[in-house]
Length: 208
Image 1 (cartoon, rainbow, N blue to C red):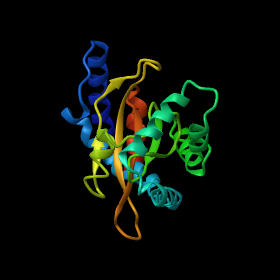
Image 2 (spheres, helix red, strand yellow):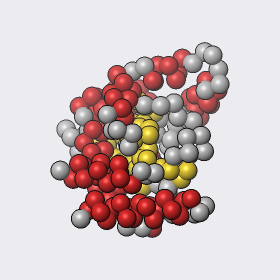
Image 3 (cartoon, rainbow, N blue to C red):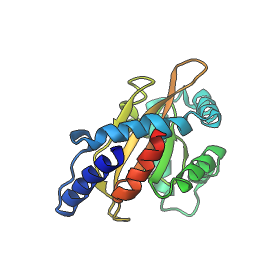
Image 4 (cartoon, rainbow, N blue to C red):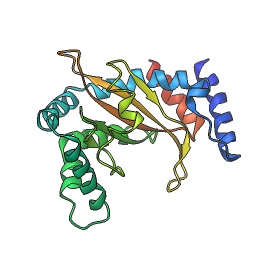
């Protein structure tokens, strides 16, 4: 029943997108299904002990950073995107957490398009792909999760990625340390919603 319902909803969503409309997942019934995915598979891999350890380690370093420091790092990251020397990007993409997230993305069967974990300041801790910026603290994906509480979920609008032509939504959840119950970071996952059949199968497996 859930698979059939999801397929029908997403066919309608994709049809609207082809006509130029970009409906928000928060404004249609598929939002409930992405919410389940967020609290199921996404929150499960996001609370892996390695993820918790990596966030806590970075928070110990970045916890004292002021806004000037955050802006400086973000500026450096943006400059490195088009540079040959990329110490900050290389260090982040080369760490164990990024390797883990890349594996999670690879084994999603194409359902995930990107994954990145943020610390208590909104800085990237690890990621599967190079993001356009390093500091996410001024965006809803971090503000609507980390600042809200341990069970917070933020579901972004459905948008067409101009480079890949993939219809996707960013799903973000807060990450709490199981040992303390305190929110220590957040994770954002790009979800490909362009293939209704694949989404239905993936959502069904998430419910098992």
